[in-house]
Image (cartoon, rainbow, N blue to C red; front, side, top):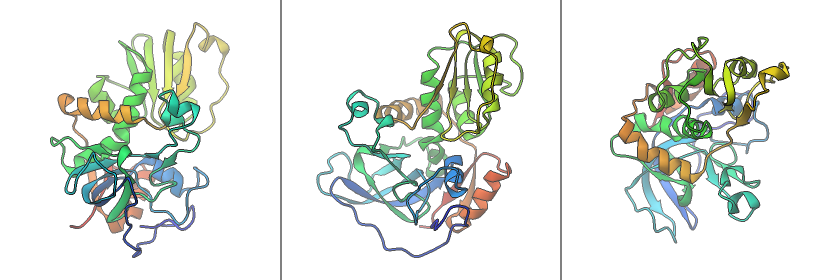
Length: 298
């Protein structure tokens, strides 16, 4: 499925089968979850994607061909391909363990063709082994909703009282890691931390009002509407606001190690690959029960 221009429907099209370069994997895809970031790209809210573009970055499949110099995976291995697809390894961010902030980073389904397809190539260094406890469909949302939610949770420190705002796929997964009830309600006590998953800037002020002194509000989205003005007293008391940008490979390794122990269950609705536009429309209209996952014929 190809995006030719923002705000246009994806086109089902035959394209040449990609070939892996050195250090890359050719993966026959089994499933790709549909992320709100995909919607931001298709709707033109994230600017300057590679065009034409195959979207999708919550990808599960099996390796069909291994490029030279790859030692970590073999043919037939099942892997996940996430949003972060390449970093330079040389800038100050990469050299300080913050590769998620790399100025030259490339992103799957944005600057690199992604998973709304039958095949994809990916840098082997940025792929993950998928725990056997998760089937292809259940595993797909872990590759972004799970990973970004996990990074957001880490940014919260060690909260005893955590609020979640916006109950989509990411919040559904992370709520199983950090148990929380009633994310749309005023909490009975001040919160130590809050994570905002919905792309609604007004929620930042709401979360701050419910935050205890020294607490933090973490924005987990790649795109958000403007944040309205709020009184300084709501921020005072060493409260903090921060965003989560992308992920690191360490995030992926840690999250996929803990996910089977938590026994995370993902709620999903499946769509054939050719119905990607319908899946995006359902997401746009808030008409999904769980995460949409595109399933490729095998």
